[in-house]
Length: 153
Figure 1 (cartoon, rainbow, N blue to C red):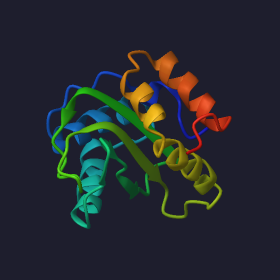
Figure 2 (figure 1 turned 90 degrees about the vertical axis):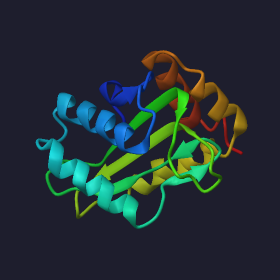
Figure 3 (figure 1 turned 135 degrees about the vertical axis):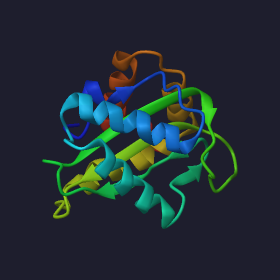
Figure 4 (figure 1 turned 135 degrees about the horizontal axis):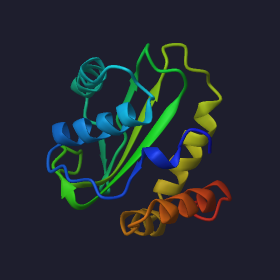
């Protein structure tokens, strides 16, 4: 689970719209020292989103971007209790955001964790527990349970 660090888990996102959510997630990356430039990264996310919505339905969005100034593959998790307008495929608000960032030459081994997470996200129970998590520790425990295959759909 080295893609996620506790500092990149946001359990109380305030954003109401997708663009605001991108700003919140980017702020966390800058605070954590994962990226040096706010504006460049924000532009990168928005350009990637123009290719198609990352809102896949079931209250989930998984935006992805490659960013040359990042040192390694990262996953930032954001949870909204009120929902975020996202232009999702099912036209419903997003409650769970998984922003995946990697350098341009991102290795393929990261796909193992993303595949595991995707399998867990198919589980309504996992999604519900995650959306109802109010602490970083609770999210961390769910991610470990996911690693252990507890939520395989």
